[in-house]
Length: 170
Image 1: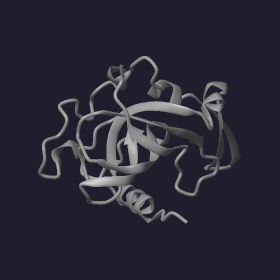
Image 2 (image 1 turned 135 degrees about the vertical axis):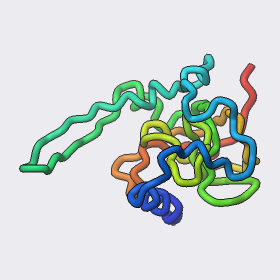
Image 3 (image 1 turned 90 degrees about the vertical axis):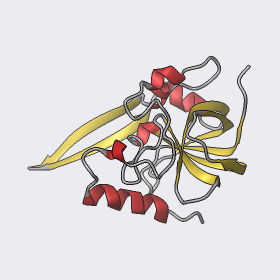
Image 4 (image 1 turned 180 degrees about the vertical axis):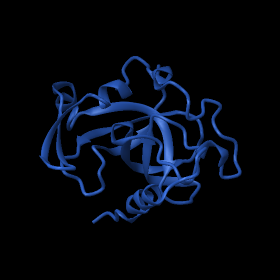
């Protein structure tokens, strides 16, 4: 069983609070010039699933009582068609632990720029389980793997990429 502790740690950091300007932290290394304010549409390439597609969820809200709202998400037909298929995604490595290479990490629409900030919402992150370790970089990279929709995952994530490996686009 995979440990969810790194994700739970990130969630607890968010619950406690983060500095107002998370871009001030850089881990002592150069941060991608795109920064947190970049438009993920800049990453769109032919043959690669776009972040707009991953953001397409159907969300319904139901009021349960005063101050209590229940919400349910369901995947669109475009997302259901991707489930179990080999896809390519482009994004930035968001490491879950300090290392030079990673086999399990988040791929995000945004480059990491703060140790206290998640790179985006649940629709802007994909858990990656790489077939071989991937060297950390602040540059965007393209990964290919088997896409999985996560239903009621305890980590709160919606997507996972299995047997992922870096690829070069033609």
